[in-house]
Image (cartoon, rainbow, N blue to C red; front, side, top):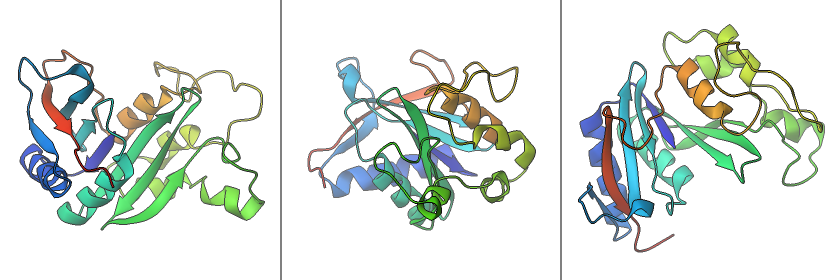
Length: 196
């Protein structure tokens, strides 16, 4: 999923269409015969636009970098990894600026300096989203211990320290997560023919 700070729907649609066309892909409004696994959803919110990609779409970081460069906006590329945890990369002008993974050693053992690069401060994140309070973000941006972390970042959250906590983090940034059938979602067919 991508959350594009300060963007509007028309410019995001145009940028995604450009990305898809460069890969001989398709980005178009859904039709009744669009396969479910090719459906992407877009929703507008106070902080900008969130795009939830089609199930078979794997270029989420590449498209986030493209969106940030073409729109000159900060873009969060968030995803859930194997139902184990959520993470994000933050792109500005096509470049990765920040990244977060609550289990930095998940893929390989990292030294303390490398681990620290995966744990940005709330202040670092908040500076890219106008009106967001760093103290509200801080409880999400923590390293998870080897045993399960109990509780929630905030009592009103829908998820604890697990994979779907990403939706609560997004809400705290001012973005919405839309489910299939949500009347405030726009649904598209997104398919890449030439994976890079």
